[in-house]
Image (cartoon, rainbow, N blue to C red; front, side, top):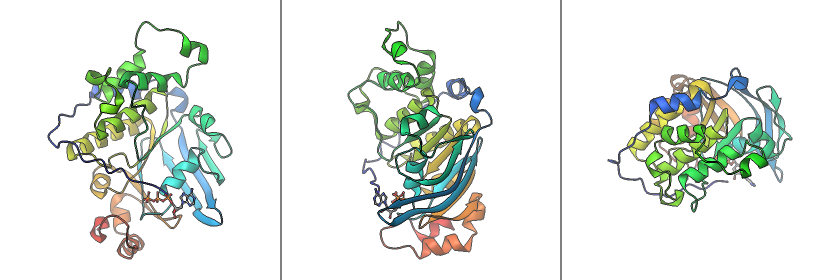
Length: 287
Ligand SMILES: Nc1ncnc2c1ncn2[C@@H]1O[C@H](COP(=O)(O)OP(=O)(O)OP(=O)(O)O)[C@@H](O)[C@H]1O
């Protein structure tokens, strides 16, 4: 069950700048152990009081693939992300980097290199942008290191700040950021916590056109070196940036392939044409 932020789109003309060089540095950071890792989901099943929300889902996503998960409301997209990240009890197998995640508590899944964002940004509004990043970076340091007073900003935090275009706002409270900027901060937090599987739930909801473009480019670049899965309803965004798509319907995989392949799949067209009231988008979205 999910909610969607009703945040108004920021000014379309707002200046949006992400530094490609800084991005290169941060995404190439200490990830040797994840270099050939990929997500492999087999027979994933999630049940809520007898209701099967995810019913035997298989999913393989490799590094370098920017995978979009789509499907009508209630298809099970967010529940799959919840199951992978240890927030929903599930059966089946979820492996990342050959490490089995099913049955592990959420904090161990984070330590295995898995990070996610939520539909509503979950940054600490009262803390500065820098402090939010610092805390995320601290999640992979031991407690003594975390408590030790440091004279300077850690390099990976500085790079992440530049990457997400928020250097000028480093000392501002995260609460004053525009919706899009909060989403970038969250992505920056995943980068500094060394997540190598990033699961992003509707990252461009409520963003302006310019912000969507920048976010897509950011995700494409991150996806070159890390494994990225995006849950999204925005079909224009998907057509522009997805390298592959998995279509879900009623907890199962309905179709999978390139954007062109799933668009041409009669099963996909039928589900979108026959969707119930309340589903977002129009029938032409998949055509
Ligand atoms: N905690 C829960 N308890 C009971 N049912 C749930 C729970 N979470 C999700 N569901 C149900 O599981 C199904 C899948 O929900 P989910 O939020 O994963 O769908 P979704 O594809 O992400 O939808 P949306 O596009 O609307 O976000 C829905 O029928 C939903 O009502």
